[in-house]
Image 1 (cartoon, one colour):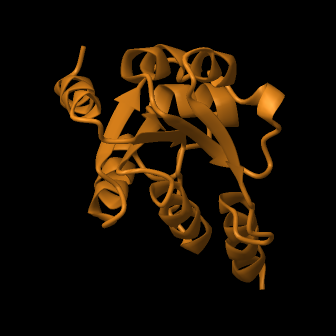
Image 2: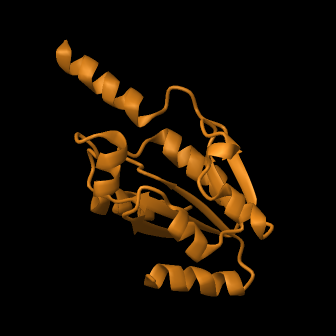
Length: 153
């Protein structure tokens, strides 16, 4: 168990409301920042489960991530709304979710509740699962597309 997970558990015992989200967060952009600000507003402590480089490659393909896990973690941790960044190597964050037992599990609006990993587990002990509105046009894929288009001109 990581030091971060231990610290999060201690905060939970002090009745701090723990909010958890996860993802790759490759090429941090305004959509991520808006989403994380909304997630933080749902509790006291915002924890990000960050896919490591190996799991990103397996999920997104061999050309990703564009930004290394170390640099993605540094950028996310620098955001005022983020309290913890925990890097995980599995394809799914379920093991981390079970270790933390967040009060609120959050994903972007492009995720349906039944497809959110850990939703059943979190609800089993009275936790909440929230899907936050997705900001159209603000995605890593759209940024990459714009960059590729601009390079072709």
